[in-house]
Length: 515
Image 1 (cartoon, rainbow, N blue to C red):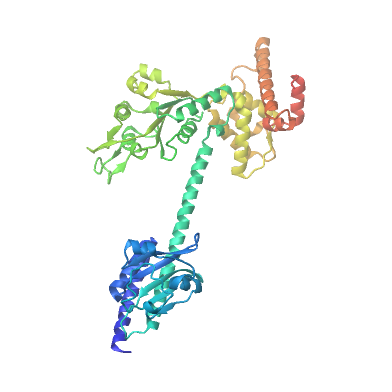
Image 2 (spheres, helix red, strand yellow):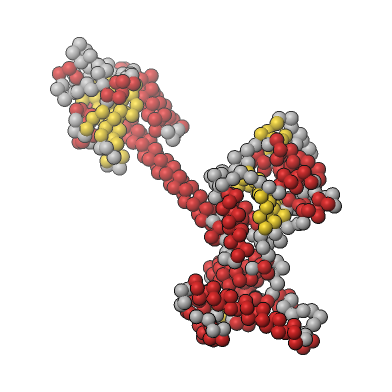
């Protein structure tokens, strides 16, 4: 090997090493290709190098990056497949060497970067192939001096072309992953909106229709919402429905239970803290107010918040600002506040356990969620929903609920509300070994609460018995009428909705003279 050949080989190896490092250091195709051309220019003295890529949509070639060309020259570098030297290389998938561009009619000089009439320039163009498909071309003016053959130039450029092809492949994978993630993000947000859409909050009673109207009303506003109701009535579900139907639906939904944390820990969770604010504070931590910036913050069990924390909460509501524990920097936030409680806040205010000024700040738009005993006409829908859910989660095939079990369900007061009903149905599905849930599949405490603890049916007077019978009859008639109306008079569908047999439905319809 000649001294000149050995020297050029050393340059090649150094250039290839730098190019490999450039490819592995970034996932951005433009950055990688610019680095490759820069390395070739620095190590091998390359002039006017271009990387031209094929657009699969337009089926045209355009310069992606270039070295030694200005922006206008790059913009002019567009070719059809088969057009000019670059187009022919992409069409045939084979390299082309032009010893003198001034004597080659196929050389279009479209970029007008070379004075072909006055200079003796050699031009080399090689394909960039990815999985046996030509996706572009790498072209340069001659790399080495006279003593280096064109074959050596082509060999080196083909190696570099294969490296560029891998960078193109990685770029396509990254773009595909980005599109997939974006699509998944849209799908998940759509699912969230569907999941917490008011129509998916089970219930069609008059009381629940009022709740749905309130959700629609407040979702488009920024007002603070106070959700009131007993435990288990679905306050968090309503809070999410409000958030995911507001203009903040794309922003964070942050929640915290004020009753689940002691006073000192609650403040650090709400407002965050700086490093060294207290023993164990090893670093800065952002609180829930910061995390909910531009989104919605849901404070559950607001009636249990300590008085000292109430003062700080009031300031956030009034001024929209606070400081982290141990910090001096004032932090401003923009968020939508939704709070919930099962306590009688008016009584808490009278007895001095809740600040009156904070109460008025929170009680801007109150929404009252009814207890389950106040909307028993929703029980068939709820039972059917929880039955299907429990079947799916426990791989069971329970078909329906027996008449005896329905009697228990309809007459029980459900002090734990919807949450207790869901747990009872899930328990019944798990322990049931047939396709029919019976009264024996419900908890004993539920069965015990059906009858008054100190009074048996034999001790009740005739008036009480008649009143109970009338109430049960009225409720049955209402449920039957609703089911028949929704099913369009189809008794089979109505029976399925109510969880009873078609025979029993027919008997009840005849008994109550329903059409």
